[in-house]
Structures are given as C-alpha cells and as structure tokens.
Image 1 (cartoon, one colour):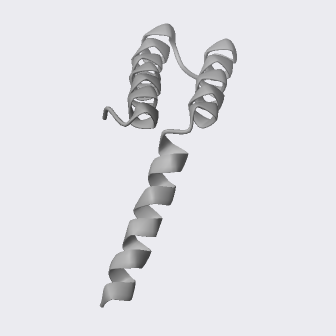
Image 2 (cartoon, one colour):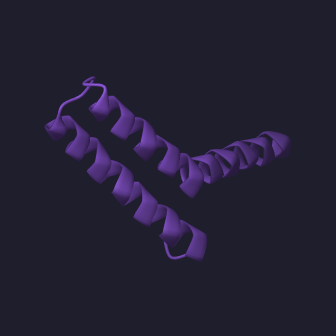
Length: 68
C-alpha cells in the first residue's frame, strides 16, 4: 500500500512539472496565435484562451517560487 502512495505522488509531481513548465505554456501560446492567424479561431476565442494561459503562466511562477 505504501508503494501505491509513492507512485501516486510521483505521478502527481510529474504532472505538475509538465503543467507548470513555462516552455509548455509558451508553446501553447504560440500554437494559439497560429490558430488565430490561420482563422481556426476568432479573436474572442483567442483572448479567452490567451487569458487562461497567461493565468497559468503566473501560477507557474508562483508554483516555482513555492508560493502557490
């Protein structure tokens, strides 16, 4: 049972590192801009998703500093 807890903590830690990785967020922002440029999404949807990604980037900074 202790091993399951350890594995779960490792999985959560890996997921957090990936989610809060600024490089991943920057890539998502670049992909979002490409979607806007290609007409896949409109300006309103771009702004909605951009706001969410920028919030996530701020959370990533807080997470990295241990203040989240």
